[in-house]
Length: 284
Image (cartoon, rainbow, N blue to C red):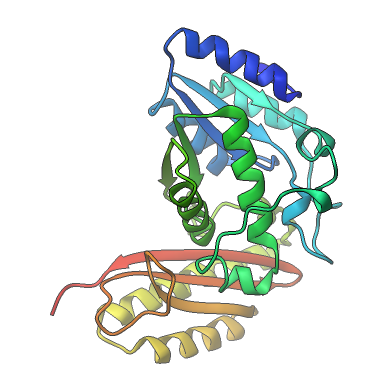
């Protein structure tokens, strides 16, 4: 596995692969890799000849009082995992390489509508930071395809809209959420949980599954959202949001919507977790 730190090094490497007629897949990450990230790399191998993974803890997507400084940096362990997964190129730029004039003085990519609710409302500016750095990585690597986990469903829709609106020439692949045996979604933030909190955190996916069952049974969305928040509170969470949405637009679900996603974010202790379930309601 090549390990590169400068944009020009990466571009030279990609140009060499292009001259050989090889397809390129990109897996962007912030490091502290877990089995979900490695599954993305392994899935990327089925979509392209060369897999490029990036590790960059993006300061632009962290808000005030968020965990930029304490975010785990585990580069040596990450390199071992990526090598075992047959990643071809690892790109680990510094913040000054990505934002040479500073991230506060950088052109911003802002994706309207789909970024405004839920995590966008709870974390102002977060999706501007995500869209900006992902757009930069797309321009640096120029991949044929890029893969993202669907645990952050809203992020995937934000990036999808950006790609469509800016006519970027690549295909996005959303990869289903990887879970522990308990059902808890794999996340770098799970490392912040105590054993007791991790045991209690399973209530998030259990509540999402309960809500999906209630929707299939014909219960009204507003009642389900209210009851789900109460269930999370009783389980020890502090709910941020629990929302039943149109899966394509993230607008609040209407009576005739069939393609839905249930989004949830909640704190357990000081750790904020997100998860979701997609579902199709049958036509009546």
